[in-house]
Structures are given as C-alpha cells and as structure tokens.
Length: 494
Image: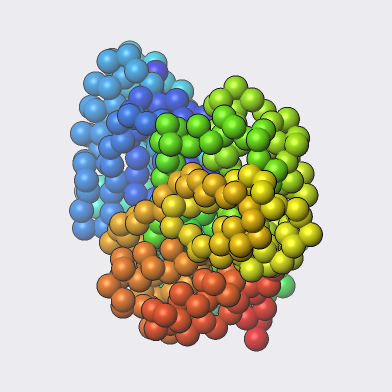
C-alpha cells in the first residue's frame, strides 16, 4: 500500500493522528522539503527514509521520477508513505502521484491535512471567510508550469470573484499578480497580506494593498514559503493577530539538553512563541546491567537511597523492575531526591520520596538529611559516573557505609552543522547541567553565539558556565525546568 500523506503547513502540532500513525508503521518514507520539523522522529528504526524534495533552482528528484519510484516501491509489497508538506491534493501534485499509482494498479490511500492556505492566515489572525467580509474563498496557484502555452488562470474572473483570494507560491510573481488583478478590475486599495513561514516560529506577515504590496514585500525581504491573501478580511489582522502576542514570539532559544529529554522543554518554549534550536550537547548512556544490577539486587538492605538526578531515578527504577521487583523493594528505605524534577520522576514510577530539598543542589540535600540516622548503616547514592562528591563525602563523615553507584555516563553528542548555524544567531542558550555547558562549548570550539543570553538551571551550572568564560544572565529559581522557563519569560519581558 502507498499512502499519500499530508504533513500539514509546518507546525508539528497540526499533523494529523493518522499521519503520525503511518509514519511509525512505514517501511519506506519519501519526504518533501517543507515537512514539519521532527516529522520523521517517529519513524521506526530501520525505515528507509528518502528525500525527494523540490526547491527553487533545483530538485532532488523530478516529479516523473517520483511517480515511477512510488509505483516501483508499491509493487514491492511494503508500507510506503509519500510525506508531503501541506495537503497532498492542494497544489501538492498528489493528484499526479495518485494517477500514476492508479494506472499501474498499485493500491493507495490519501491522508488529507491542514493546508497552508487556511492555516497560515489563521496563525496571522486572518479568517479566510467572514460573514461580513467574505462568503467565498478561492485557492489559486501563483506559480504555474512555465512550459504551459498560456495561463490557465482567468484573471477577469478572479478580479470579479466575490470573496477572498488565497495564492500559493506567488512571491516571485507578486508584482505581476497584483497588476493583473488591478488591470481586470480589482481595486488598487484592496487589502492584501502576505504570510511568510506560516504556523512556524519564524512566521511574519506583511500588509498592504494591491497597489503597494509587491514593493512592501520586496523591502521586507520576504521569501518562500509564503501565502498571499487578497480581500477585505486581510484588514482583520489588525485586531485578530494572536501569535505575535505570545511572550517569546520572535525569540530564538537553544536547548542543549539530551535529545531524549529535550522535547518537553522544546515544546513548551514553542507554545510560548519561541523558535527552538535543538542542539543536544550531551547524550545519556546507561551503564551495563552487569555493573548496576548486583547493587540493586540488595536494595532492601539500604537504609537510605539518595537520587541525584531524574536520569538516576529512572534508571534505578528500570533496574529494580529488571531484577524482578517493583516499588515495594524500597519500602524499608528512606528515599531522598535532590530536587523537584527528580521527585517528579520517582512519583511517575510509584515512589513518593521522603525527602526533597527546596534547592536542587547537593549541599541542600546534605542539609535536608541531617536528621536521618545513617551511622553504621548502608546508603546507596544513585548518580552519573561524573558527579560532585559533596553528598557521599558528607554521609561518609557521619559514619554511613556509602555505595556510590554510577547508573549512567553523560557523553558528548556531536553538534550538527544546521544546529550550529542556527545557534550562531540565537537570543538565548539554555544550560540544564554542567555537562551541557562543557560539551556545548567543546562542540562550538568556544565560539559562543554573539549576543546570546545565557540561561542556567542553577548555581552549579552557573559556576561551570563562568569557568568557561560565559556571563550568566539568568538563573532559574527553583532549579528545575519550570524555573528555567519562568526565568526566561521574566528576562524576555524586561
């Protein structure tokens, strides 16, 4: 089966549930240039991912070749997803691909999507229809096949159309489009809006009239992808624009957390309007079970179990389950979490920690444990292989028999070119641990983005940043991801 799947206009949140399901099942995915960021993250390991995108000045593959490849792959019997930006049947050439499949007798399914002609204006605060201003809408291509003998567009009919005109792919031809509409009777003072990168964090809109929109767009340097909207509804943007009111709209934020952990922070920042640049500087690598399981097998013998990170909490619980037990194995121990984020991770696995200091630093946990009797008793400290020795040393001084068990290593994640290029122009760089500072600075060879403000999760991370020559502009309080977001918001509002 071949699935012609629309990926939507750009915002990953606008992808349909069906599209996400099919991406996860596909054996082969042929994808375009304008699919949403992260659209392929859900593809199964081993899936064959092939880029067949088109862009001005060059195509990875011509349309006839794509059609033939779809037929060939469809005949091989696997699940083939043709992933297209926008809706496959709205200026997406999905109709041509469906024809090729039908003629070859290859079964196919079409998965519609939100089209940019509706979504981009909506994100710009412009309804394409309105009871007072537009009872009809026409979707028009602004870029016809240059090999056509003559235009298929009836400019006289479009000029007289009693509603909103939505033009796709028309930036290059905008001067001619505006002139044609005016020449055939549309008023030169007709409101027009051009929405660039609609639904994406870098979205912007240029407003004008048919008389001056081409000049305004040229002055603003608008580039594809962009949607042009002609009609009285365009002036509603002045009152209905909403995405620009998000507190981080127009700001770019680098997230250096490990990729597996970054998605929650990234999504929250995007919801606040930021353009997120994921540049994971670290990767969490669990230690072999043979190293940690012998300690976990004796978990009932520990009087105190202290966890110094959410990763440590997750991997400890994984090991407990791997050794055939569950949360009841910790019933006889005092469980201490270094901070709210670690405590939250424990609660997700059925453990309510007994001790959680307000500050997520080892010194605060040492102070919170001062009334816990540890003399002569066994204590397990679950942590990363490289971590500060403040907690185990303090407990040892009090007579505890401390086992420090490294559940994971924090290793460098190479920064890719696109992330580095985008990070170079960032407004903020967020650091959520000392290791993110060290590895990020190594990855950029110490060339920190000029003008970017540093956001640190807490004092230990801040100290590491300063050791690397960085000025810390913002420090979270409390020292967790929620605190990072709040601190960033407060700074951006100044």
